[in-house]
Figure 1 (cartoon, rainbow, N blue to C red):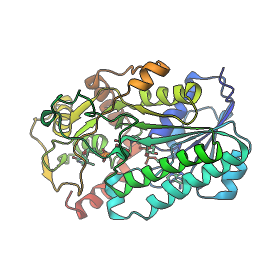
Figure 2: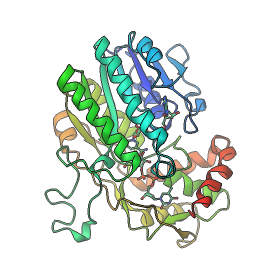
Figure 3: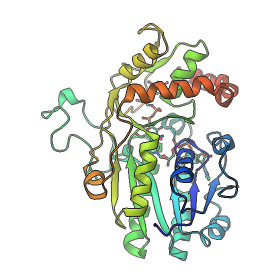
Length: 346
Ligand code: NAD
Ligand code: DAU
């Protein structure tokens, strides 16, 4: 029994937020009402909530920066789980404006309302606030030694407009906890994969490229490492922190899923029956972070969370199947997404 009967999920029409809404509906009957507050930007899609019971899940189309709307919704809620954000690094390099507005001002608007009504707040953040790490082969402990993965004590050193806006939002939450007693927790998660991810992102972009007869695109050499986690494992971790986490604490979420981009792309090609080298190297991302890696010991030992999706190959197979069976979900947007990348040489 959590006591959270009426929760707000911001960004619940996006990739990870909508997976979380499905997870709560399917696993936590004690939550009677979920209000999804979502602006439906290019990344938000009402269809991500299709099939969910309308008596339990209500979509409010609106902006987290809208103080009056946020105040009115938060006044009736038991908890806010805050996913809404501008989330794509490449977009933030082209135009940082919405990142500053949504990620910083939006978070500020929400925490002010949660403070006013003494409502529990959980802030969803990213491992990118910690910058990047050297490759395993260049480290004395080969990636397993002290300081060779991110921990909650790693220094903040974000690289991109996106990650610096997320770092700013984390710092606001921390200050509101300390100065105003906001009942908040923060989680910083690694790269998610799974259904409903926008096709601008690496894994769905390559899957839908292959399904569209376009050659996949690898930035630079492809040696950059991401620490992949299935989005359902992220959802369970967030629920665990929301219900069992200690107020004021930061938890890192990761599932020991380090892989470089070339390996991931070659696996996608193999699983889709393509030659291993059927892709193009394209222009690298400016300031491209080299390696992310999460030490999730605190979450595992203090809160007892463990990932369930430990076989990346199987998780990727399911994800490929989902995009193959849901062409209507992504096909209309494909040409515009690729045209935008092409303008940038990517
Ligand atoms: P996404 O881009 O798929 O979805 C973002 C959602 O937020 C969309 O539905 C969009 O319409 C909504 N939104 C944007 N601006 C809004 C505003 N001003 N008001 C209301 N709604 C707004 O993002 P995602 O990949 O699902 O990421 C969700 C959260 O998780 C973000 O906070 C992101 O920083 C964090 N995160 C993502 C990953 C990842 O791998 N994708 C990993 C760690 C953390
Ligand atoms: O680490 C968590 C972060 O993961 C989240 O905070 C972000 O919201 C999320 O978008 C993701 O950021 P990345 O920049 O790591 O994800 P992206 O899918 O854009 O790229 C993953 C890697 O693949 C990265 O090294 C860049 C590379 N890439 C990306 C694209 C789109 C390619 O090689 N080719 C591509 O076409």
